[in-house]
Length: 128
Image 1 (cartoon, rainbow, N blue to C red):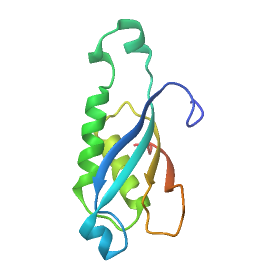
Image 2: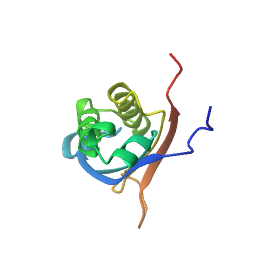
Image 3: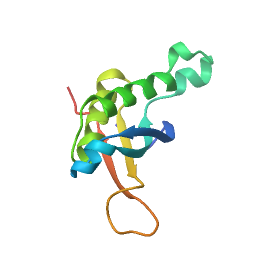
């Protein structure tokens, strides 16, 4: 077995969404921008050698799963939003063995002049 979070990976960065996640009433009412970075561990040997999309995972399909999970339910915490996305990706793509997800909230309602609030989860598929 390989070490977690090593090997081939699919990377999607700066996926932008508008959402209503957050603890405060203003966040639920007004919403704000969120950005997601993903790394998905999967063996990419077949698509690399065949040059056929049918042997790999479509980036568009990944985006669709992330979007549906992000928009599916309003959550208070970034951690919960990210976990919903992780679970949806594992359910949709059996070839994905691990996920690193970073969820960024550049307009978090805290007193910062510049920067963003973010969380990052590292998850491995649980053995069946």
